[in-house]
Amino acid sequence: MLNLKLIQSKSVWENYLTDSSQVSFLQSWNWGQFHQKLNHQVFYYGIYSGSNLIGLSLLIKIKAKRATYLECPGGPVIDWDNPDQVKEVFKLLKTFAQSEKASFIRIRPNELKNTSRLQTLKVAGLKPAPMHLHAETTWALDLTPPLETILKNMRKNTRYSIKQAEKLKLKVTKSMQDKDIDELYQLQLEVVKRRHFVPFSKAYLLAQFQTFKADNQIQLFKVSYQHQVLAIAFIIFYGSEAVYHYSGSSSKLRQIPASYALQWAAIQEAKKRGLSRYNFWGIAPLDKPKHRFAGVTLFKTGFGGYQVDYLPAHDLVVSPGYYFNYLIETFRRLSRHL
Image 1 (tube, rainbow, N blue to C red):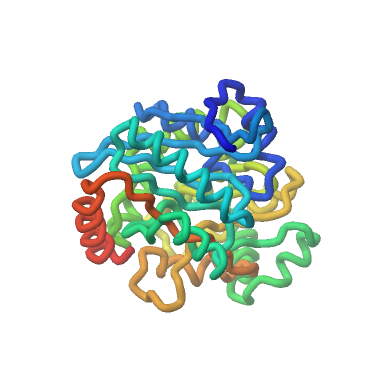
Image 2: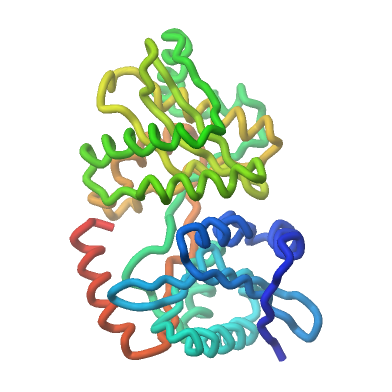
């Protein structure tokens, strides 16, 4: 028989998570701390069989106008090959959600998408969510080969752009300064004007940067040309991978390959840290040319690598109020080409 227990120890949580094959910064202790800075209530639940810790579920309580719900990004971390255990875990989580007066629980496990996993979710009572919960179709690069090999395996145009950046002597700097988040935010707004999406707030970006900075799990990269910052991004380093998470780029001097220089510098930093994978984060599915990531997909895939498809977001319905939220999010997804 399984039970849920709150975990109060960061080391207990992190040790279990980083030893798991499902390790993700989205289930990390610091992801929860980041959300606490956003005034969200966070629950670090361990899943126990007797006294043995067998899983984790970081739950974030979101109070929106349309509904109160719990989200579990990159989780829960459980044995997805054991359907009976999965069913029991979600029964426990549903009972907890009811006590919190949440209308549903949204998850996006850090497990690869396949027919068996989808069936397990269905049998456990979950249904496909109307909206994503973090990137589901992603692009990753194996960092284990030498840098020369990684460069050689890139698309010809990408390799050329990196070499052009070196010839132009673009300046790439690394920063751990909070003040640079303002610059990231401003350049993100320029991207918004070009690609028409809803940006994250400066407070959101700053809280995330500050939280992961405390454990040296994040780095901000800036690319300048003739004293003008053209591209900026922060990379999260967690477990065995580096994740290209948020970025911005100037609308000026678009012919300068600043974004290529930034990615190449981040790849080299990840390699230096001994990580085995560089995660470019979201790309557009092939059958969705109007997807929000369509504009960056060609850029990301040019660095070489392979597609990673995670299980898509699913919802566990807790109360009838869920269906009002379902209609609203379905409309938003269609109107925003998500």
